Length: 575
Image 1 (cartoon, helix red, strand yellow):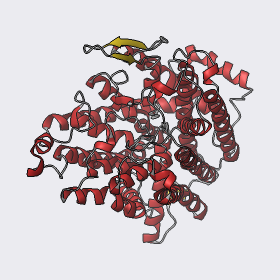
Image 2 (cartoon, one colour; image 1 turned 90 degrees about the vertical axis):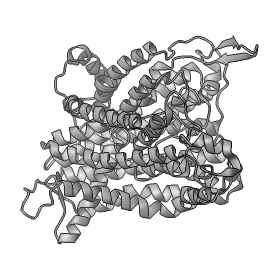
Image 3 (cartoon, rainbow, N blue to C red; image 1 turned 60 degrees about the vertical axis):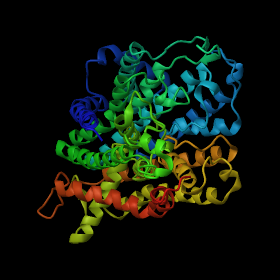
Image 4 (tube, helix red, strand yellow; image 1 turned 180 degrees about the vertical axis):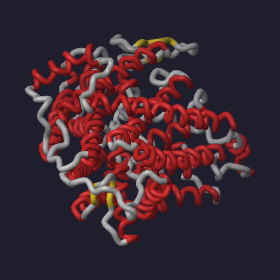
């Protein structure tokens, strides 16, 4: 570890914190339908969308109609993307004449991008045509992120409205999030990335001759536009197989730092939006503080572990060359232009959020360093989390925390003046427990299935971690890969696809039911017995509940994977 590395981490966190409040206020004004500086330019376009779609922007929806709108929109998106992939060989903008995808890979990829997971069982530059990348993947990067923002706002309305039967209008929330937030920022960011050297063209791939006389094919295409929204919308799906480790997606330390900021930008700002809509910004800062504690703990462990190097090599006389290479830290699988600090920071941030982009291979991290991104997702992707999903996930944990606090003092828990009763707690537990149920269930099947095991590149606890990470990433809607797993097989494509569906929609529906129930409740003024939810005590309780729920649920699986591997490495064993 170096002082320079800690300064980079501190600067990143300081900039995210500084941007949280202004962007949070902007999001509040946009999603409340207030006039902003873009209203004159984009207002006619917004109203035109409503007329074309037959949407009454003044009509609001009950939570059931809001949920049906989300599900029907997602189903339509899945079907169109599935068909686009199957037929891409016969469609234009395919200069490399790439064929259509198989049915199981199309199924997996369509679900992946509709659920904001962006898990990729394929290499982008060798599989997807330009049309599929632009009309399919990039479009869904916008729509899935906008859906997450809309869902978060719906839950906030549930907390802040009184005696209400509606949560807003999904189609209006979706349109405003896309038109006034994601689109203008992405246009600006795409131009920035082009300036920094990221390609944006429709040319065929270039064949170059190397200094040794060999032929090399250099892939290119409409990259910058996808990189902008994949980071801003916490999508993470790479145009290239190497994702943000590819020099065309992430040319320099400057672009790497900007992409890191984008991963947290909107998710952090939504905590302030929550505080503003609750008319008490301290409520939002309490959530932000809990997320920050978990983030800082994770990045500190990851940076420390990678700076130590592989314990199997350090000081071992059996391999002096490997020992010397590890003396400055574990650089295996990392880009020299980023180094250990930025690689550890990126791995932590991308798995705290549901981004999935990677600038280093997590499979090459040390056992403890690789455990950090794994645990981050297992905590429910609530450490800032995905765009929208991070906030509503953390609010679900807040309800559990207040329920436990209420049990301790013998009174009905309250949050923002709303009593938390049996219905809300049942729905909350249903949303939280769906992730471990799907994750551990599929993992148990894969651990004994020859169809799954033949895809592993490693044996022992490291191979087990590869499977554990894959299902954790899928159910957590993260999309990052541990590497070392050849997932483009019918077994993995189908099971991971189902896991993504569970991780997205088995949370959304109960969450909207909670929002509808809370919106209909009357406001209860705080009393001397009300637990303060804008205090340091609430932050500590919330952090503890997130850690305990994740720790108790997944500790046996972690013990069989990264913990066992770390102990084996200390004994000089590798896998």
